[in-house]
Image (cartoon, rainbow over all chains, first blue to last red):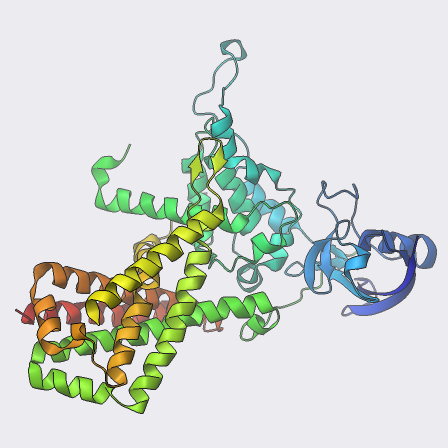
Length: 247
Length: 128
Length: 116
């Protein structure tokens, strides 16, 4: 197995002693099969136990280890060392406040996610005895890709509109709203539209498309948001030009 | 333990140079200036057309100049960039599901390029 | 808490429709005027032919459709672009760009009706 000495530049920030972040470089002997997360773990275990970062599954499922790797939002567990040169720079996810080192404050995203009601709101509640809510494979396929979101927030770090207008509800949350709106078992679209068709909702999106380019699970949030725009536009014209169409 | 989150502000005026994909996006957005200028030219042509043969001849004469050529060349570049960037994202804006499968994006994009070529050829054939 | 739904769809509809129509027709139209600018006036752009085209109701509709949608597409995108360049007076920008688009729309209608 080949080994390579990597200069790992880590953005450090200690809220108790630092007024602003600074880079600290570690020389890490990396195996070619490693990912950036392995290099960070090596630093933590052997060189500097004070480095803080989030991680859990090491297999692109939990969505915890999102960070900027050479300026690009990446899951550290999916960013292979062999794709980089001898110098790798890691920073906390862009567009989020830094809590400490590579750990960001994600309260804003969590709040927005909750605000779009990302769960099934059945059209009519029925007792368990009435049986399951059925769905065909075709109906499932319509939204399946959006169920793959792991809330890793890479799309928020990539989205310039979120960086410029922090009120923007953003790619992942609106995509998840779209996922439930598209679900044949769901009846909650009206409630979600109150949030996502608002000014800070989908209309802050200008289809830069960066969210879809960085998404590690190929969710394609940009596609979801454009579909939400089309649907919201049709809603608006129906509501204002054809009021008799209203339910 | 005290919290003191550090906020990194994004530049409001030159953020689009920070990543190539942002710069490409801005190039796409800026095409609207060419489309707008060209549409105003069309309205101006229409005005001269309504004013009669002399006025319209004057318009064509004014257009027949280095500035007119430059303006049209710039508009052509802007318009073509707009068309390609617009067609290339159509599968994202309007995905088409047939049964359990989605129509491949390349087919949707290809159909738009085909339509674009057809319309252009028809206009050229009838107009030149 | 309920937030008011945005009225952006009013302008987003024409923006999207206009983006599509300009993508299909603007390049070839520019090509025609480019020929005219180079001194080879295409037959469509001669006074007789263009006047005959614009005098026809169907022709009027085509011209009006293309200009209207291109105009509103460009105006709305300009509003977003100015915001992206860091100009945050969105209300004033919106008033200005939509005013230009409205003016262009009215002028187009006016000139088209004068051609008969």
